[in-house]
Image 1 (cartoon, rainbow, N blue to C red):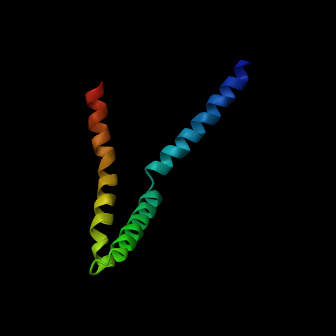
Image 2: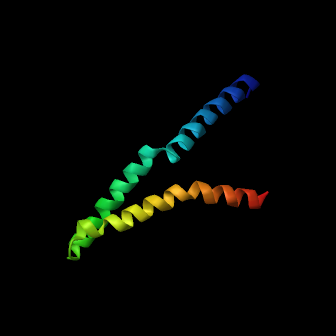
Image 3: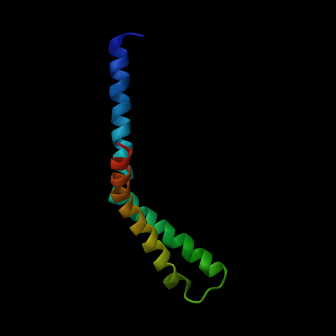
Length: 83
C-alpha cells in the first residue's frame, strides 16, 4: 500500500467521522428523536388504555430530549476526569 493511498483513505475516514459527529450533535437528530419518542410512548400508552395517552407522552419525550441535551456537558466532565 502506498503512502498517497493511505493518506487518501485517512482523509476519507476523517470526513465520515466528522459527518457522523455532526449528525450526533445536530438539532435535526434531536428533534427527530423527540418526535419518535413521543409517538412511541403515546402509542404504547394508548395500547394499554391509559387516560390521555398523547398528553401523558409529553413528559417522557421531553425528559429524553433534556437528557440528550445534557450529555455533552457530562461528557466534557468525564473527559476531564479521564485525563
